[in-house]
Image (cartoon, rainbow, N blue to C red; front, side):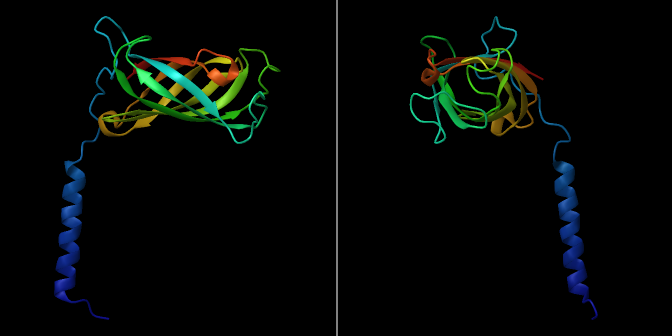
Length: 177
C-alpha cells in the first residue's frame, strides 16, 4: 500500500515534536528542599507521628500479629513531638516476618512500604522494621511526587503502635540527598 505524502509529513512532524518535548525535560531532578519539617538548627528533617494505629483483617482485636499477617498502619505527621503544625498523613502496609513476641526485639519483624502524604506531594519509603512492639528500622526513600519528585535518601523510623501497647507515636529522621 502506497504511503501518502500527507501521512509521512504528519508522522514526521509528530516525531519531531516528541523529540523536542523529551529534550526539554530535565535530565536530573531538581535538588530536594530540606523538607517539610526541617528546623533551622537541625542537620536533617525530623517528622513526628501521632495517633499511630494499626489495623488488620487477619488479626482479631486483642491478638498479637503472627508471621505472614498483613497490617495497615496510619497516623498523622507533625513538625513537633507535642503541639506544632500538622504536616500531613502517613499510610503504610506491612507484612509480619516474625511472630510478635517470639523473635528477638532487634530481629527483622516486618517488611514495610511507607507513604508520607503532604499537601505538596508524597514521599515513598521501604524497608524492614525490628520485631519489637516499639519497632525501629532503617528505610530507603524510593521516590516521591510533586515537590518530592526524584527524592532519594533514607530515614530512621521509630514506631510505637497503640494496638500493640505503645504510645501511638512515631519519629522519622530523614536524610535527603
